Image 1 (cartoon, one colour):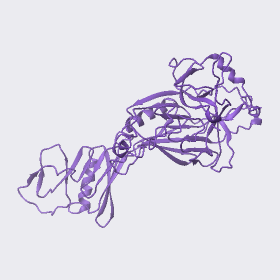
Image 2 (tube, one colour):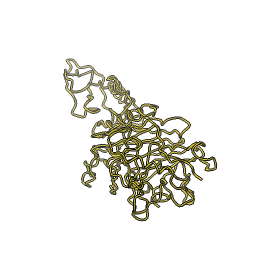
Image 3 (cartoon, rainbow, N blue to C red):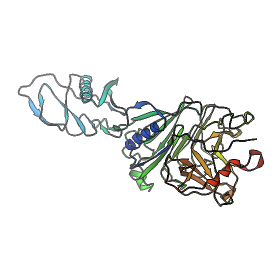
Image 4 (cartoon, one colour):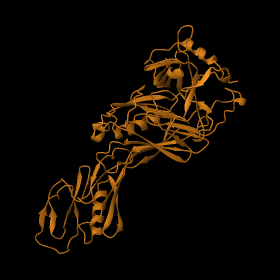
Amino acid sequence: MLIDTLDIAHSGRSAKHVVTGPSQDRFIEQWATLLESVGWTKVEDEYATASVTYPLGAPVTGGVDVIPKTVVGCNTPPGILTIGTREFSLYDPYTQVPGTTSACTFVPMGLTPADTLDNLASAVGSGGVWLCSITYNGGTNYTLTITALAGGPLLNELQVDGNIISGSTITSGGGYKLASANDSSSAQYYCTLTCADRGGAGDDYLNGLLKFDFSIGGHTVTYQLIDSTQGVKGFMGALGVGGVASYTIIANPYGFTVFDIPHDTTAHVFRTISLFCMAPYFPSATEVPTSEVFVPAFAVFVLGPNAVGGSPAWRNGPSTMSLDAAPFQNFSSNPMARVITLRSPIYAITTVYDVPLFLCPYVQFGSHDQNTDPAWVVGKLWDCALVTDYVAVGANLDGKDFGALGHSDGSGNKSMVTLLMDEGTTGVYAPLGQSARCASAAGTPGSGAYENTGH
């Protein structure tokens, strides 16, 4: 018999931050700062990069001196190359001399296309911002690649223009890789947040620029969220998708969530705005008897975009689960991660004082994506609570403020519950009531008092 008190598993390191005007660089910086503050570790910086190809090589000089030399200005934009607002222009060192202008950086042409492009690479690298290299692709074809010398997101989303034949691209890939807490209570995994490569397309606002690469058990799964610039431009704007005014991030040492508006269950086509990841906590032998077989397996799950906000039986979007096996992604209702709660279809469960019960949710999911795979009761969600009623915004539980992440309204024979997460603050929300602690003595799995939320 399960004898766990169902007390909330407090990490003691939870925190909340609201990123207003969440451009890709602003969001990435503040996300990394928040996660480090609660116990995540920055593993490495990621560097912005971009490449342009010169299929016909580059202009060359004839190598013959002409005196007097002609004073020249910048080439017609974009010159031989433009990175952001910095333009590089060619001149013939045998016949020309650069004028006194700061509008561009002058690059001497060489006797061969490779010489000219090597000179361009040196000029780009001389600014102390970019590492620049030239790759010979055969024939007259060359590729120029720039990589930021400083890690992080600030040099993402810069327009890079080659000549009229080379075309344009946009820098991407700058950000940070962080690791969750490495202790015996939960599995460790990694998340790398960068700006996604949109292939140089200035009007590609369909795919989210905020690119989350989760490394789970040596495998990588990727999810992308839109930033504040997306949803209102290009064809996304024409579709009326809408932008993101702010993102709320709640984090602890073992996971984090990102969302735009809690309880936003609208089917936003093309509008990916929420994410949740967690390595569950395994109860110890002092909390439950060994007969319950809570084996400390490697366990991590990630709820993909648009899963947060609705029922905590997460079937609304693609999700990833890993339970002592390679992670798998599901895109339908079975299998899926979900939590266990007291069964309360249609009506809320309250005490005799009309106070809703609350308890720590156990998450359950399987180890692979076969429909016959059982959903194991895996462990507790750190700093999370299930309230057996509808909570609109948040509530104060155990003296801590919990923000609402989603709910099930009791329709369709589902439990009426709200999933909340500790925000690391106090005094923001009204107390739910101390009498709600009687949830500690509620029900056992064999009594019918529990259900798989959403089933």
